[in-house]
Length: 286
Image (cartoon, rainbow, N blue to C red; front, side, top):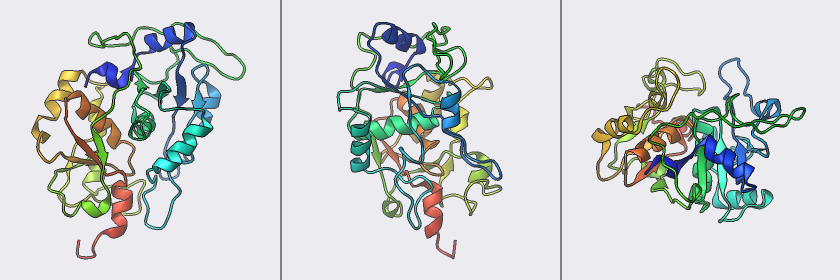
């Protein structure tokens, strides 16, 4: 897929807003609770946000309720997404833009949840939210022209929010044992190796999984790497059946999915329960 089928540039979004053609914009910024550090959510939005944006909470809006032996962030059902869409006054033809801090994990989860529910006119804001973008706070709303931060290869189109279905399917835990696919763990290498686990109660990974850390998609300056890098990255995983991606709870693995989509992967599988669900079912012999 092309960049502009997954992302929208700040410049284009800014122009749409100036032309009174603004899509529905959602702030998805979130910081997971790690060790003694509490989670942070709406505080980001209340401090500053894109004018007209509304906040989507990872645990309240973008996850199903927790249950015994569930993932930390259970994937919402179609019915839950439909209820959320109704509350937000969305239809399947609505144009949606999601943003986070520029690492695309939280915005990516919202984007994929709505994509798989049939809301295909959706994009992620390229580069995420930063002080140089149009911003708004309760005390000082404003709309300023953003600096140009898009790569030269960022293509434009007549309809920057056209319908673009994605070749991604969800797979549940019960199918992992019989799947012939390569399992791809998106978590940091130290968590994959089981040397440290700051979030979940048990360290380790799913037996047989290989590690493609999600943060590798960003360079030393924190910028998303060029398309050619993503194409080269996934050459070794191009296979039939397609690989199964997972992480801790169906958040950061989506960055790997975005990376793989840029490499023209024809079909991708996501195990959204991730390690935080799977650890409840590890045989004692393992």
